[in-house]
Amino acid sequence: MSIALLSIGTELTRGEILDTNAVWLASTLTEEGFEVASTNTVPDDPERICAAIARLAAEHEVLIATGGLGPTSDDITAECVARALGVELVLDESAVLAIRRRVETRGRNFTPHHEKQARIPVGAEIYPNADGTAPGFSVQLGRCTMFFLPGVPREMKRMFRDHVITRLRPNAPHDTFVVRLRTFGLPESTAAQLLEGIEREFEDISLGYRVHFPELDVKVQARGRTQSEARARAIEVASVVRDKLGDVVYGEGDETLASITGRALRARGWRLAVAESCTGGLISHLLTSYPGASDFLIGSAVVYANSAKTRLLGVAEDTLRGHGAVSPEVAAEMARGARRLCEVDVGLSVTGIAGPSGGTSTKPVGLVYWCVAHPGGTIVRERVFHGDRNEVQIHAAHAALDLLRRTAAGLPEEATEVPMSQRPPTR
Image (tube, rainbow, N blue to C red; front, side):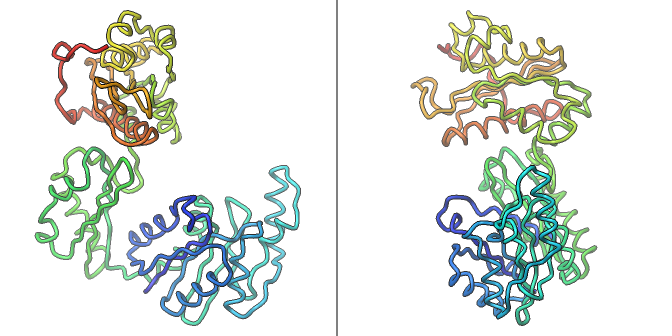
């Protein structure tokens, strides 16, 4: 089955936003056993949308399009589909009622702009939007089944899972299976070097790599006579891949570093307090993005100013004067102070220079220290991260979570630490 993806929106062609929908759809379809033959992006231009629909419908058996179903004047996808089919748009009363109900529930007035979203090509199968207002729909053009979904990622994903993949799944080849391993701490080139020879050693196995900063996914795809055979093969080879990569592999599938770290803390029975400076609360945000964080996260503090480090966490003024706020000594006192303040088992801290200014010859932009203080001792890590301010913050937050994960799980640290007594003086 040949599948094409079409992303519709001038904001995409201008580079104003990233097309995460196509990436997610392609990855999800691959894991379901399908192969995406083509990905395409067009602006909100009726001629280009109609031309893309006609061309892709002629070349493929399935077209999945996202975007252009909203209430504004540039949302013209439904009109273009009707034009391509040679039919009229019709107002679907059930869609009108659903949109009105959602709009009024949110305390807003229902307007003709909202009603516009309920105008669907004649003969289309309508998909209700459980997370928004614009319904999706599917139509047939020649041999091609075409699905049109909202461009808002959360709405698109829900509609795809509820309506599209359930319809496509019976037509999957059912001869492949993918295991997606989540890793942190290895660049793509190093991972590829460690896994050199896997595809030669194991027949019908292919490896794929996907970088999504600051992590790397390694996909093990197996093909077999049946899906159960492919599944067994993929799991077998994924185990070999895990052994070769080591404990930089932290999870599988949709697991995240934050969720796995939380699981390790729960398993250990540890309660956590977090003290952040340069990451500005990002670590706490990542941890609390998942339900149940209250099981282990007792408190957090963003201590940007030195005075806050001293007053809230008890960091000694002599330590700040002698070593500076960005130093292993201050990171250690922050973590121990958070642990003491919240009366918990483990304290996690991070302090650094996220940039773009503030660096010196001895303490460059990107220098970050992070620390875990736990019942067995205090571990401080150091690294200079490269990139812009946002990238430094994201990388630092993930590095801190990874150290916390390793500590809670009893895993070895990623690198040997230099004792503080052997470090050059900082100021």
